[in-house]
Length: 451
Image 1 (spheres, rainbow, N blue to C red):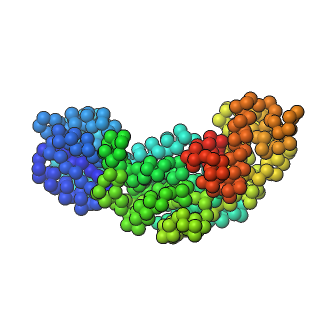
Image 2 (cartoon, rainbow, N blue to C red):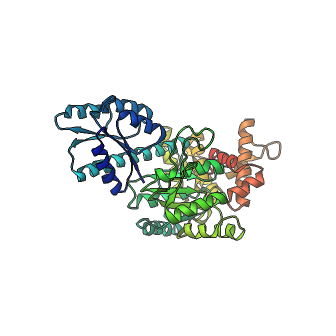
């Protein structure tokens, strides 16, 4: 439920707007004047501010100037009486998204509010997309025309138009987030936020705050109220990556949200309602985890309404030519050169390799190959694990033409790949075998393009 702060020194307008906006489904806060509004904003984090222009002690323009310093992304609608339109124009110059003339028509006000809130959601979504880009994301389109991928595409088209919860399964690097984004982009929620969260990359405490948000003072360092991913995804799609790694105590809270569509922030007691579609992904066998008592059976059934199982790259090698061409073109463009060719010998090595890291590993290998190659990608331009015979030099098993740091990283990457393969793609089991924490393994997988 989106929250609106209404500011006016006239009590009648506060009462009318509270009733009108509450009936429309919004959570409404009111403040009798600009000074009181600033006090409310120190404790609350509304999604929209509606303020009158002419108020004693602190005018609407003065309030806006301070609000923009405290909450620069908070959209503001100003209310002004006939004859003071010039003040509204000045407010628009200072960053107000719209203005309303007093007295107003109810429907006109509601349309203006919805437009401002939609802008707020788009700003939040763009921030998340920028964060994704800064962390490095997978390729921007799904490449593949093999029979397994055509079947996946058909299922995506069918399920996208529904509200059904989707569980995407598959090994690491098979493109689960890309499929989740494709479902969102083809759904009626396409214009609303797509909000991803990696459940393996955060500790239990941090993940709870990330999902549900927290109130001021909820824990050390919680200096203010913070919205969680569920609130940011309201009316859109929340993507829970590596959902199989959620701790049992959080599984209970997630189940409640799926059942009741309500939750409380950490440290809070006010129920919040959201309209969110859940798309979850995991590389674990959740049915097996249920049997082992590691995952709640009721939560599994709530998530497993529609299941999409992505095939590993080794089971759709007919897609390799298109994938290779796609990545070579992409990374050649990034370095400002013409795409190199791929020699028959290099292509044969690509076909022969099992690709335990799947499409993500292939992408990483071809990015390196484009950088290392001349007019043509040759076997020596590919990573050592793809061309094992090329690693033989005077001392058995020692790589050639590499610094110590490069050799250590190469060995670390191969050990992670082997552990993932032996663990059937389950990152938690691979981390245990390698003597790493789950978050440390997640960092290293991301570093080497395997996550």
